[in-house]
Structure formats: structure tokens, C-alpha cells
Length: 401
Image (cartoon, rainbow, N blue to C red; front, top):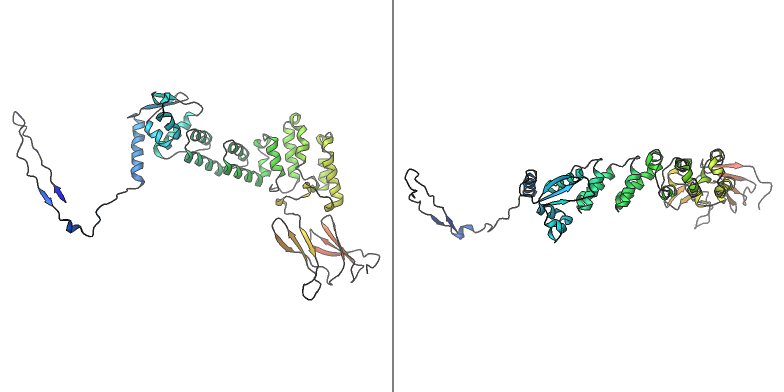
């Protein structure tokens, strides 16, 4: 290895002409490579992201002072001096514009329509600094701008920001926005939020502006979180009455998603059957008749509207009463229920103190009657599902032997 010390030249300014002073002799020092054994022959230096950040910072300063800028982007009459190379490096939109034989690749002033000037300013801040200020007032315009210029990182940041801002007053509008731009994750988050906060959502103006198909989707869902089914009926009537002349013809389609059989009988008679819009809508009569039959027959009458929503805490279950052991054949007094949705078994109240055999079991609404059998055949017991309790009722008039 050879190290060379440079020569220094001095000039005598006192003389009429420039005169070169005696030069320092060049010193050559040879280093024996044997002394470098055990050391790396090269060093890969990487300062991290600080280097790229400092370069971007300088380019941003150039942009602010219009130094080396070679194009001006005009948006809503506001001009933004930029560097074609920087825009092309960050955006395939501008790369296609400036690197191909388009008219804009030769013009100094390029006008872009369909976006907001404030959003363009935020976009350029991100391009030149890697940072952007997203707010509730500019998130939509920044999202549309980043989508146009195909900056996916900024576009996804806007979608994430919207997801964090979900509220009963905006979740419906956010979901429609998400569906328009194919943001599936944001759309699913908005839907889940609306279902879980339905009672608050219907109190805001966005609810009244839902499309019929959108409202039907929420009303039909088993995941709708409500304290009682009456809330769904009131939401449907609120939406219809907001534009009664236009929407009253849709009443039947909406009521098909209200689980009228599960309404309290007094509420059903006084509020539903007493509603003037329903009284003059004969196409709804079969739904009312179905609810009346359920109030009389209970679980013997089945339809999609007799299935409780999960949020109510009720669900259709399979009840197994009694039985016997595989070994020994001993009769069992146990009563259990199985929930097909959750796959869980639950222990219910036991049968009476004795173990009956060959008895009859039937359902009456949400209760169960047990009668007959070889032992105490006159006894009749009823299982009360609300109290989880077996109690005796009037004995039968004859033995069932």
C-alpha cells in the first residue's frame, strides 16, 4: 500500500508576477501488507436511514426555494414547484407521465384536476419528507389523492386512520366510502361496529340516509346487538317515516327482517298491530298472522323470524332429558341442553327425586312437560326454562301403565 502526501504550492503576491515557491518534496511511504494480516481488507459503511432522510430534507429545501425545480404542478389554481425525478421515484403515476412521450413530459406547467390543493400539499409533504399530517378534515381528500397517484402506503395510512375514528355518527358513511374504494378490511370493521352499536347508530342522520338494501343487511343479521327485538321494529319505522311517501311501499320487505314473533305480546298488539301504516298495508298481514300463531303455539311454529338474535342471550337448543347408563342400565335423572351454534353442553335442573322410566316429554312454548311412566305415572312435571326449575303441575286422571 502506498500513501502519498500532496505538494503545497505557495504564491508570492508581492512580486509583479506570480512566482512558484519551492515545492515540498513528495513523500512516499510504503506499508507492508504483512502488517495487515488479521484485519478486514474492506469496510462496508451504512449510516442507516439518516442519510436518505438528510437527502430528502435537502430536496425539500430545494423545493421551498425553487432551486433545481423543473416542473410546476397546478391544482385548483395553486402552483407547486417540484422535481420530476423525485415525483417519478415515488409515484408510478408521475413516472408514466414524465418518462414516456406524453405532452406533460415536455411542459413546465402541468395542471391536475379532480383533487384538492390542500391534499396535494399534504401529498408533497409526504413525498419529500416521508411524513404526512392526516386529520378528520383532510383524510378523505388525501386518500383520494394518494389513490390517484398510487402511493399505497399513504392510502393505507388514511384507511387505518378512518378505522380508528369509528363512531356511531360516522360508521355507516365510512363503510359506504370503503365499499366504493374496495377497502375490505375497513368495510368489515365498519359493519361490525355498526352491528355492535346499532341502538346508538339509529339516532344519527346517517342512518336515515341508508339505502334499503343496506338497512336490510343490518336488520337480517343474527349478530345485531340489541337489548330487545322491539328496537329493530322501531328502527325500521323510523327509517320509513323519514320519507314516508317514498318508503312506505318498502315496509313489507323491512318487516320480514323484524322477528315479530319474539316481540312482547302487549307490544305487538298495541304498537305493531296498532300502527296506521301497517293497518293499511295488507301485504304485511301474513307476517302479523305468523306472530300471532307463535304467541299461541310457541315453538311448534317455526320460521326464520322465530330464531333469537345472539345478543339477546337466547338461542335455540336441543334438550336431552333422562336416559340410562351404557353399563348397568341405571336410569339417569339429568337434564342437559346442547347449543348447536356454540357447540356447548349445559347442565339443567334434574328430574324429580325418583328416576322415571318410559315417560312422555313434550314442549309447550319454551317450557317442557314430563308425564306418565312406570313409576308415579299420574305425576306431571313442567320444566320452566326461564327459572331453570322443575315443578309439579296437576296430576293426570289416569295411570299410564
